Image (cartoon, rainbow, N blue to C red; front, side, top):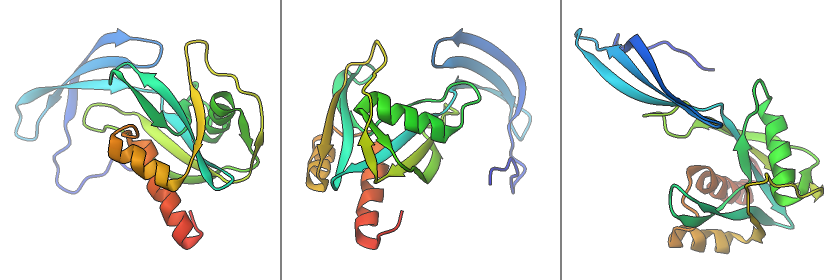
Amino acid sequence: METNEHSGGWVEKTVKTERIFDGKIISLQVDTVELPEGRTATREIVKHPGAAAVMALLDGKLLVVEQFRKPLEKFQVEIPAGKLDPNEDPIVAAARELEEETGYRAEELKPVSAFYTSPGFADEKLYLYFAERIVPGKLNPDEDEFLQVRAITMEDADALIAEGRISDAKTILAVYAWKLYRLTGRI
């Protein structure tokens, strides 16, 4: 349950919002806020429509994609994910992204978690789903997406984390959820 309630009276009231940039994926705004004691401060905020990701197992291995991430200037191994379209149900986005990026469809998606990726400066909320029963579908990456699809073992995942080739929060969370699932049989 989401709430805007607080327990200490220290909510920052927005006094002014200045739109700086509107792009295809994100927008940037600078808010002037009133602090609890009356002074003002600025907050740089990235607005994002949200995203969905899938922790999909194929024959006991985790489906991942490897791609170049320009902000990091390096290749990263990640679980399939993508942004939500306007008013899109996250489970629909998760199913779409899994098939587009890996060429597999999930017979069933189970929710794992939903979390904010960087609440200090962004409102992006990511929805993580689990799929164990997957079947071949149609690979259809976005026209500007160049991906290599792999199925990795848990040992591979641990090594990729140690090497820094898996370093994003959603994939690390998925790897630890996978470990928990292997130990308990529950997601």
